[in-house]
Image (cartoon, rainbow, N blue to C red):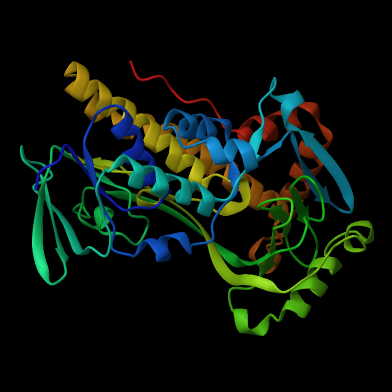
Length: 395
């Protein structure tokens, strides 16, 4: 079998790239080691930057998002019991974010791909890219007990941090930058109305809190917890009690509680690998970079990677601009590092590091809180990063 672009991974980045290429008349086959049900079962982010929203609209998969997604003009920061609203729309000249769950984005992309007739091969095991530095790259995989070969012009590695794409690049070629944080996030999803109509990021002496949402009837809450904690130790009752403890009474009193649909603990880390390409293999999203979720940048950075690679490939196939291929990593990384910086900044601003910060660092942390939350310029900085920095044009 032959295609123009082989995409490894059917998460949102792989599906979005595939859909955009399809609309441009470029053939792509997607290989995914999991089942569709497993992919849809992943609980992930729910805040979309304007750039991500625009890409979904360009891909023709925005109808349900535009009908059901919640446009947010602002976000709240809560430090020391003081609530500060960051007016995103006012501070950024009209930009907003869209609250629409990653699971729903994935579902919309899956349905669009099925309707288009484009090929996605699920339960493809032992996927392996070959001859990435050569003229004729290809990917092998196993399906139903047989080994198959997919010849292609280019390979897009959209298979996440644990995928095969990054691991297929010789280790001596890559430089890895990493920051591991000494805590995790305990997340709970529940069919309860959100405690507030906008997201609340809160610092408390007992640890960070995020009050998020997926819809007007579904909430997603997070608590900072030690890495030694186990999900089994957190009953629904304990979670709700701790959440209320870390929030002002005015919010706790109005909170609607209910049984959890899902609970999990995620460790926090920052990771970037350079370069994001090797020959004709291009890394996209979590395959190349991981961010702590504090800045709502994971899915959005993946979307900007997709945008850059898609626009480059269109110029390659339509205009013969193969000179642009070597620029993908450089262009993508400029935005990745800015997203990493903001995610690191928000994590540092709002979490309790305890003994992991010395007295000096704690004073600097407090100074940042006082400056950014009490300065117009500081709020502008937070707002413009939160809604998403602009994409570079591919010329």
